[in-house]
Image (cartoon, rainbow, N blue to C red; front, side, top):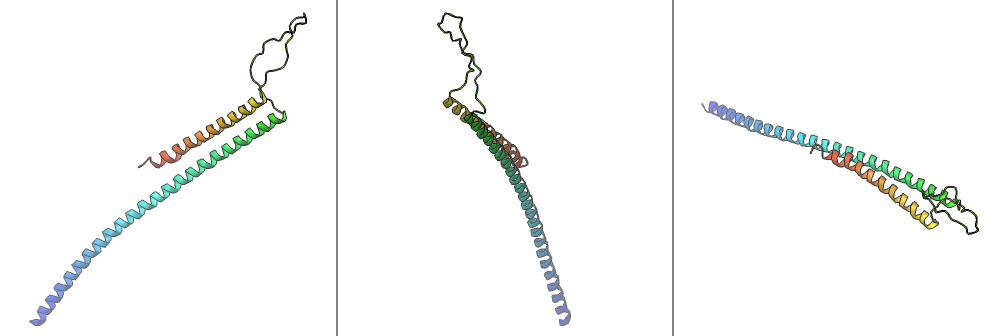
Amino acid sequence: MKTYLAIAVAALLLLLSIAVLKGQRDSLALQLQMTQAAVTELEQAAMKSRSLLASRDAVDLKYTEELKNAKNENDLLRAAVASGAKRVRVKASCPVVSRDTGSASVDDGARPELDPAAREDYLQLRERIVSTEKRLAGLQAYVKNVCLAGGADE
């Protein structure tokens, strides 16, 4: 009888151990699922972050290059104006200059042109306008392609 009792106690302990191990297995399986879900979420966030960084870099590269090209173009224009190859003209009309020689009035014949100091002011203003336009376009592209794209599904 003692043998049967020992076998019954051993079987009961074995069943209890199996139940505890099954509970631990189920708990570990749930933790594994939660960890896998967190890893998947982190991978998606990393991919989105890489995509946004690539978009930011593309916008930065494009508009930095455009800004550099605009500056080079303005520098070439400034050099051409300084050398006399190009002139800054003003659309204007000049009053007729008459000479008191008793003959009919004679036009001066010269086209209106900016004073040298005003030419430099014009070129600086032109450069600032182009720079502002390029920077604004770059910021608008950044907001559209990076900021708004990053918050679209949040």
